[in-house]
Length: 354
Image 1 (cartoon, one colour):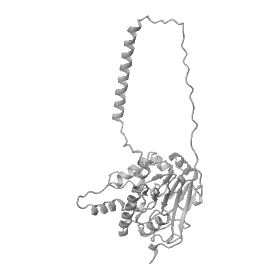
Image 2: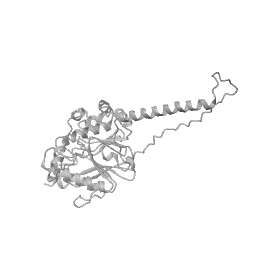
Image 3: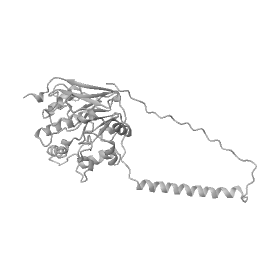
Image 4: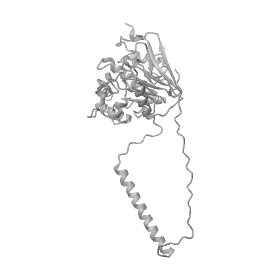
């Protein structure tokens, strides 16, 4: 499916220079003061006004909380901060729910040609970005640790090569991801007890190449209820996942971005809320939303003229409801998302071999 990237340039308004008229021949009603006596007084007044202005500016900025700056070299979309910057030279690969099945994840990445075809540990995607849509883990199962360790290693290798890997938080991830992350790194750093904080590449949402990625679905109503800032929602979720005491109200709600099936269930096929979707996407200045959470038996599909994509196809062997059991399917976005392709294979995954 092809979608053209529309320009949103606004017409620039040219302002004409204002002509100042000088009135000549008018008598000055004020008392005549020698020129050399008026200049020092005017200079003193101007100097005092300038000093007062500087003091007010300093006081204002000292009392206003400042956000940490992000260097131009950092891709904010890979650090949990929404970014609408489009990089046409790279691909974005979206992978559906994994549920702790490392073999299924490896096969999906191999299908997209971002890891080697042998053991899948070498990054070959150059500047490509992989977005795993959530439910990376299945919830407190032994195989979850192997899956999380694997994707963390791939994320490191991709970042070093100029690419990236991000994961949106799914409902199954909430049960285990923070504790499992600490346990993995505590074992690795048991000598100095230096456990890294919960990674920012795992977040409640990500925006890459004008595409919003969330595990469930996000509505404008929920976004407005959370303060109208997607960046704030991502930050609040990350602070809680990192061990903060305040859990955002929307995380556990059925209509929130982690649990909602607004654009992924059967009802969205019969009565898609495309107008509400357009309102959200236009507000966020993005072109589409990609979701998981609900297994699509027919494979990856879209609604609302390609503005919402559903990519959970039951890759894991635990998801026996999928129509293409054991097959692999991922979504590929090229040219800044203007070209969207479904990559698929009918070859059974090794994880389905009994």
